Image (cartoon, rainbow, N blue to C red):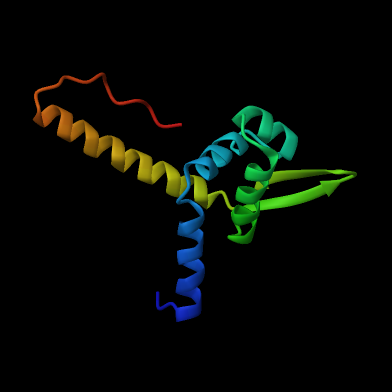
Length: 115
């Protein structure tokens, strides 16, 4: 597939949006379903300003959807492919670390089962 420079910039923005641990923690929370900002703040034990800043980045990258109801904003994952990307990266990291550990003579527990 041939992508234009503009399309490549969108792809890069999507990857940049995943480059912050708090954003990955937000995605992990939202795997279970839609949550309000207050719920996310409470679960992550972070400030509302900090969480809101990261939610804005994820919405801007097209990863999350935002829905307003009354005075509350609710967020959900609008692109489930992003979860597959995260799983692929995590599996690759796990395999790499497992190989390194075994190369050093460590015996590790069996590989965890996929979700």
